[in-house]
Image (tube, rainbow, N blue to C red; front, side, top):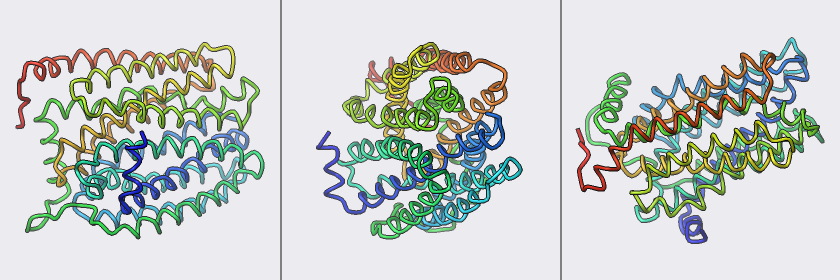
Length: 411
């Protein structure tokens, strides 16, 4: 583990990219946790919290196919800086959310931030291999994978604390400051964030998107990898009931923040402990299937746990698995996809994941005021478990061919 983090001390540009991602992810949680508590208080309904989550992920899913092509055609540094600047402007609108009548402004603000994130995410993922040497890529992925988990722990915990002590609007001010910090850090990166392109005009957006989809479609292993995150995504409706779980156990905003923090802690620890799998390709597909299944088992435990400490522990277990799932698939994709196509492939990967998340959250939001939260949790967990079984059956042949020394088709 210390060896993995040594890439931070040795590589200044990776350190800046990683630090920028830390503050951007932290900004996300200083918005989301206070909003998920504030909106039900203003409106008297849990539907608004579900709508915020669904808008956040749904807009990402719709835009990622296009923004991925932009990440392959435009200077990625400029994309990252512009996305942070746009999010900074959008978060200012949240200060106007003061009553049930102004609650829709939260959806507008979150929607605008989601547009910015849809540009930021594929550009940042595609840029990573360009700021490290090939020998450091596995370590860099492990460290980068910890960014989201780290700031979910810190952001969600502090978001809950600051919201309780100083109110949600103080959290929104912290978000604005973090986004400006991320912009400055990104502007200081000196290495190019993409490989030099060959001469000629880049393909038009639709043609570039079609090229990326054909590349994925012709490669069974890539098809398997870009459908991995959807398992956890389809179970992500559980997040809509986090505030309700906390309230049911008498924990309030602090409890909601703690649940989100444990989500991040699991996502942080999982990739760090499972890093050896990155260097053992034979374990990749079985490990991904196991991680999906464990996520489902964890939330089945949450659904029927009578004590809040046990709920917190099971959330940690579920996201230990979910974080491992995310980093293993990201590392595999970065190693197998050429730089010129990487933005589009990552955009497709994230589009499928965020579309699954949006579907799950909308489904949970539609029944949240009518169905016991335990059954929402159990339903989401069961969907992930079934997906894991079907995915593993469908990808079993790839493992057999690799063990036999077969070559997967490249076209």
